[in-house]
Length: 164
Ligand SMILES: [Cu+2]
Image 1: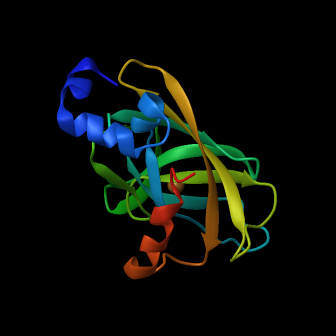
Image 2: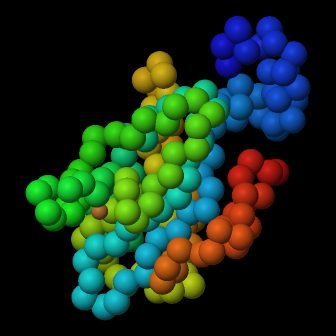
C-alpha cells in the first residue's frame, strides 16, 4: 500500500475491512469466472471472467493442470475474418473492471488433457504483475459451463473472494 493511500481516511477504512493488510488490499479480484465445456477430441477452449485490480496490475500469463498451454488471446479482425491472436499481457487499470469474454480478450486453454465437463471445475492460475513488476499468482477454481450464465446468476460468485 502506498503512503498516499494510508494517509487518507478512506484508505484506512478500506484496509480495516479487508482481513490481511496491504497485500490483500491490492489483490486482484476475479469475478464471474467460467470456462466453456468441451466435447471429446476438442483440444482447446476459452476461460472468461471479470478482473479488477484495486491498485492496478497486468495479467501476464496463466496456467492450468488441465491444459498443456494457457494463453492470453484477443479476437481481432484480419480483413473480413475474425482471428484469435496471442497477447503478452492485459493491462488492469486501477479499480477498473476488465472483462475477459468470448468475443474479446480471453484466456485460452490449449492442448487439453481431457474434456472439460459441463458442471465440473477446472483449476486455473493467473500470473499477475503489479506496477513495481512484482509477480503474484491468483489461484482459481473455474466452473465449467456450456455457455455464459445470465448476468443475474453471475453475481453469485461475488461473495467467494477474500472472505475468511
Ligand atoms: Cu482464443
